[in-house]
Amino acid sequence: MSRHILCVLHQAHSTTGQVGVALRQLGHRIKVVRPLVGQSMPRQIRRFDGMIVFGGPMSANDDHLPGICKELHTIERWMHMDRPVWGICLGAQLMARVLGSEVYSHPENQVEVGWYPINPVGQGRRIFGTLTHVYQWHREGFELPDNAVRLAFGGAMGPFREQAYMAGRHAFATQFHPEMYLKMMDTWLARAGHMTELPGAMRIDSHRSGLVRYYQKQSLWLKRTLNFWVHSIL
Image 1 (cartoon, one colour):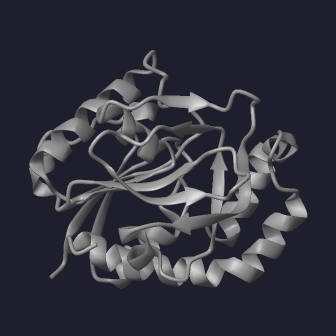
Image 2: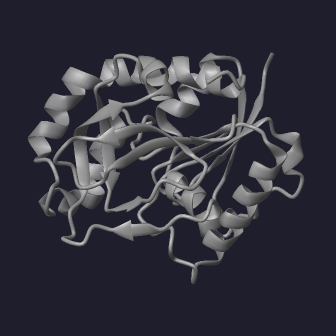
Image 3: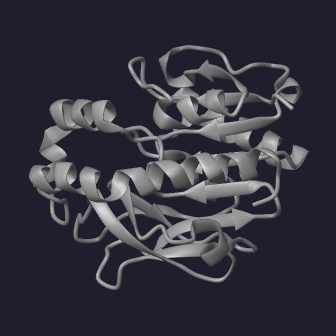
């Protein structure tokens, strides 16, 4: 059965990437809204069957941005409705704030920008399967919310431990970017290539070599997981 998914983006030029492609391939409809560029969140959010909150360059702690406050409120409303929600990077951090956790930058200004290993644990072993490396682009992380279930943590020497969690049956959060594909990667590297010079970031050539090594597995994982997520069977 076709589902209607609300996709929250954070910049005028942002796209849903492979998430949008996969949802359409699965027969679902999407509605894109960009609160931080002046668009209003839908008043009747109950008409949507799921919500995905994507990433962005701003901080989840930027309460001076009216759109951030609106999103926090919408996420809280949505989680009370107990319907599927997926937070990606900034979205995962906003969800963590709603659940009472701290979002923070690394004390030594470390970042994760590029392909990094993840380590599934518990229920995450079933959800992530053989997925070993994922695409990251962030300078902030979060504490695991109370009553949330850790699904994956970062590499042993990685700067951000928490990489994925679930809260209840319907709230799923990933620090990494499963929506990424070649054109999106090239756009990010062109517009924010300075991020690759920060402590902990991968070199530009490793972004592209990682695409060859890891992208297909991440893309296949995304489509399968979206299908489970939208039907609340993660």
